Image (cartoon, rainbow, N blue to C red; front, side):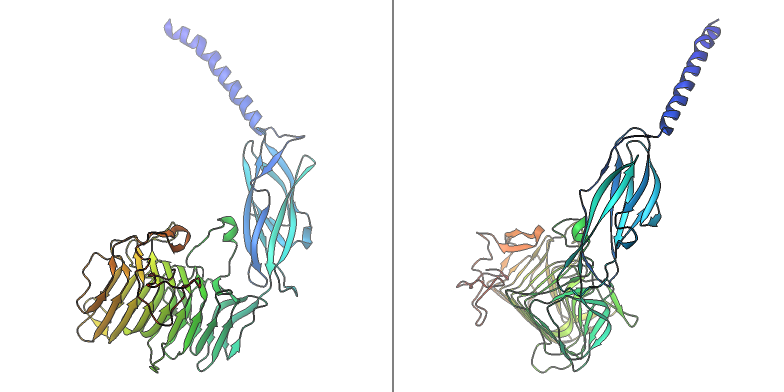
Length: 482
């Protein structure tokens, strides 16, 4: 009897649920046939500088269906049609116009737009614009597209003879450039150098970078569209290789240059170069002049090392070498080094881990196996420098007995809980005192008031101004900023 009563009301309930399901199904399939609105995820689809002749840039937006009913977009197109430099891709379908795109109720569809800009005779950046036009039930909705084009001098797989670069247009290095042995490349103040992901500048001869305090020389990657789709403050490491100085190279000078977002591993003739923004091979010339002299320059956001040297020679004054995936400064296998008024350190970021590699390491040897190594004499004079970061220890100095090692640490602010080796001459250093940088998360390594680095240095003849050109105090501050 109870089963009979149960069946009595279950059957009508089943019919009711079936009707609801059919009704709902029919409603889901219903198209909006008149009126309606759509919305774009951006007000303007903007591309940053795109170099002519060099690939293309791609960005994406979403088109939102604001109704509960399904809509049919009869056309998604470029206003300039076939003459447009832009290209579209919707649901995997490429073209200048894509027709009959369905969008479910309260859903969206992705539209990918790409651009390749043809060369012009203009030296200054220029604007390339168009409109994305979407038609719904006879009504057009439009979105501006805007890209900035830039002509450039292209260096492709080139061996460079003695020359001086110009400043009227940027230079773009694609598939490496090599300064030939015995030749000199001069890069003047104000030059802009963009380097492709798989490329770097190799130096067999001599490199002279002559930036000034008012007009530095900038090296960076050649894909600038991340500046748009990530944000104003953008430092993604590994966008290009770096500079590589071969053992034959000598007399290199860098003044007032910025090297950012480099340190990618690249290859030359099938041989891989380590991830380092600046690599210096052994000094075989040994003429008493450092293989590389670098002044008032910045290396930051390197995927690998900042400066990597092997039994080489270097002098660095008033430099900032910060936020590197490998050691910011790594001296292997001895050599002759002088660093004064430099700020060296890494804290890590969402794009750059800092869990193992220290900010600075100085060794008179290089491991060749688990228990074997090569060793050469080491001389290093490090004064008025800051070596700091987020690790417990940020500096490591070590030597093997087979080769002499003479290292001086004077008037430096260091992050180090381990004892400084006995062969290191130390004087007036400060240990484990926060230098109080203004905001290292935004690459601002200036010193706050009350920083223990202020007035902690010693006067060095000839070095009377800081990185910014500000006169040094007496006594001066440690690091590149007074």
